[in-house]
Image (cartoon, rainbow, N blue to C red):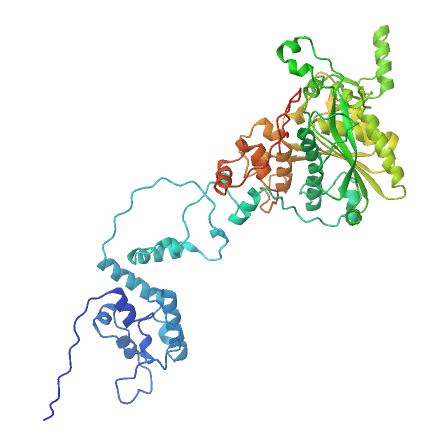
Length: 600
């Protein structure tokens, strides 16, 4: 006999978060559309009481058996998702609601409410873990390729609403929430680790060169660089760095072999721009005589040769580069102080007439005791040491003045009929000699060829009368000056004398304290270093503006030369990346002293 069995009672089971997700995916009312109605005939209209009955509390939902969802009506059947992924559950719920007429329900109950209810339930079931002991704040390190500030979303709301839930699920918050650590303003690092790695590498990624042919006269100083310096024009910035690297090549060539013989043995110079070729090496001779006591204190200085290699003349012979620049460019590059005799010449700071006639007349008047009354400051005068290096001829080499004039005259004859320009570039002592070279070329050799000087960290050269003469001869001078470089302030001007020193030309002032990579208390050598100058020019945008974020010049050479003046963040990062520092040249010997740019 058949007897009807009573319905089986489901066994009680433990309540867990996974059973909640299985029985009620987000949101918990999504089965209203998929399950059949218990009444034999559906109601023709929707009543709010049905909504209240269908939206059951989470506690009662956990005690009932999970409802079955027909696989035919489940559009996400072929894409199983993890129950721990709230985003997938939300998309699963949104697909069901969009397929049915339950859009009114979504306006009443939201996923945020469901999460908050679930969060309160889990907080009751799981004890709160004790707070971890305080840890020392780690050093700021660039590890992420993205900056949280670049995100269009606000992470503060996500951090407040999701931290408790992630802690309850025992999941690391670093997978979902942004790091709350902040860096000091003075230790701002590049946003990308790849960008930082490239900056610390020894491969220079230079900015693309733009075509400057239509405006090359403006970039060469025809209008005294009006409107190009503040803010700094990007094409002028690229030209300044390019010419600065010509001066940097003089240091590399000199310190690779400081005791090379004068003109009878040409020196190989590796130019940073292959569009140019060296046509002549330049030498300078010191006329200073060291006192006898130097032989006792430093005998190695007495063996120093008075004539030393100081620079070169190069000309652009690449047709493509000539078309880009709009003319054929002749470059004269001069290095800074590197020998002991040159240092001795730098301390001969009294003013002497630049012209030989004026100097001879002054010497005759002083020997005869006659003093001609001349207005003070009308005679062009320059520092005695600078003029000595420029005009003195050696035992086996002509003077620097004669060599430059002879070579430039030869190049002008060779390229007669072409549009030419003369660019003289120098650093430190070389910047002072560059002004003297340009002044003489504009007067006697090339009065109709545009002549410009780009100097880096140059001192004062002569008095105001000399500065006025340089401007009358149409020589354009652009001085790049670091605000904390002491060399640019010497020789000092005596306020009691009207015939004192004066600067020449326009000034582009940079500041090493604006660099995020250099220490704010960088020493005097760093403030005068040529590589530091090029680094500052590459990042300069305008006065009182932050450092350019897309600066492309490598930091490897700066780390090699001025490692103690670079912030520890980048020194340690370069060490962590195991980057090989740039090679350094050997120390000078046989009477040679290292200059601030003696290494590279």
